[in-house]
Length: 116
Image 1 (tube, rainbow, N blue to C red):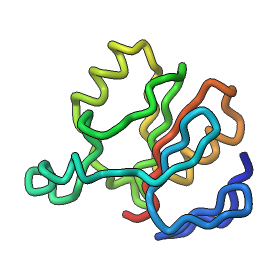
Image 2: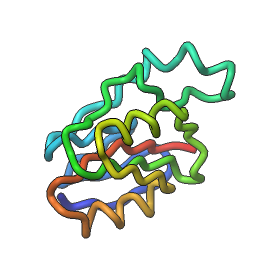
Image 3: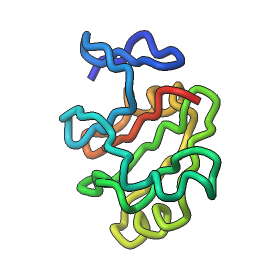
Image 4: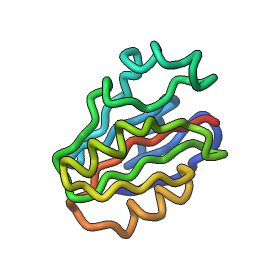
């Protein structure tokens, strides 16, 4: 995958621009559906990443891009679930997550937050 032009609010992957969070699951790109996590918004001041979402666990490594400023909250349950699935979990600001994805092995999935 080719990543270009990440800036606050958008990311370009393989020539297509996305103005929303994305999930990369075995090479397929889709919109992050965060509705299931909205119930935790008050607790975190921001909609966190929770295990209630459809997280792409079928991989060896899951990279979570936590936003331009690294502010996406990731709930503890996500980290525990990664351990249970035996998936290496990396939580990094999105620009650093992109760097990992550009050099990562094929068996890496991702969730990329494009704002904060």
